[in-house]
Length: 162
Image (cartoon, rainbow, N blue to C red; front, side, top):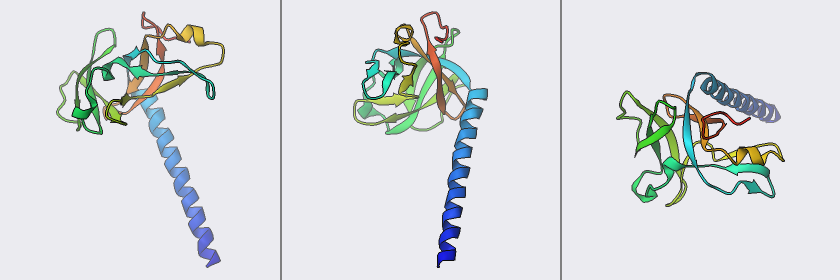
């Protein structure tokens, strides 16, 4: 019985390792191949005493939407302007239908009034909060399946804040 115990433990460790590396590979691929879109930020409190300096992100395209009228998980369909700014078209539960000039961003609904699109927080080095206060956009890389990853914050001139 002891022999099987170690086989099970090693097999589980290998599976966890493979899953972690696969998830890392998908994020790296998204960073390399994803399309950059800017989502306008809605104001939120930027400080946490426990976690340090960070900015809680809420996107303007999720405001003014009755969360009761949409599914718990789904896609926010957006169109990207010439400036690279995403504008909400609609929320839908499935990947289709979608027009040629539209992109998908996955969303989740945590309760009846909050819709979460993309990353919810952006951490930065302590003492650098001043430069991030001017952030107007969150830059997301998006793939064709609606997966997204936050790559940075951008100012009103659409320049990345570094």
